[in-house]
Image (spheres, rainbow, N blue to C red):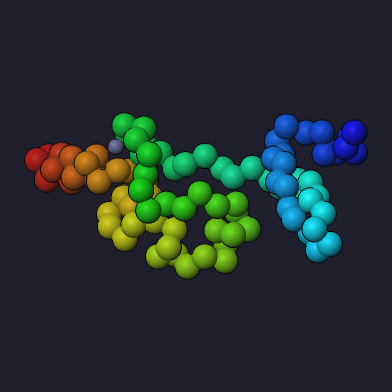
Length: 88
Ligand SMILES: [Zn+2]
């Protein structure tokens, strides 16, 4: 039975082969869910699924597409938002 702090379902189990040929059970934090479009809810492409400490060390250009509303809206909703703004 694992230690009480490791019985949490917010952790995932990873089987790691360690030196000596033994397989050891490691506990890792689960990755966050994929980023979604703020308008239609579609999965955003080009936005990594990484833990905050990894995101912090990542370059800004690697964290979202470089376009207006990049990392917030999907490309289709971004186009529509721009058209809607021009019409007003
Ligand atoms: Zn969208």
